[in-house]
Image (tube, rainbow, N blue to C red):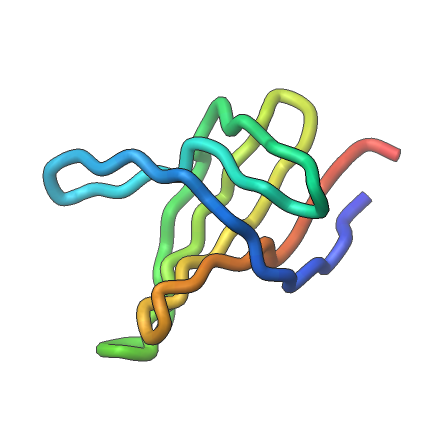
Length: 82
């Protein structure tokens, strides 16, 4: 089932040369440990750039968004069996 969320999240990321990867995030008082980043893409340009991460935790699939203009993260979508 696909659910549109669009809520702010707190996130921990890993930095490597030229790359950032989400590791885990807090949403609705629950921590989700990400096991895989499946796809990364971006939209917009300059200060309005948004970088999207499609990720999974071996149970659920998430679409996370990093907003370059205010350095915030949102959980855009959640896909789960249900």
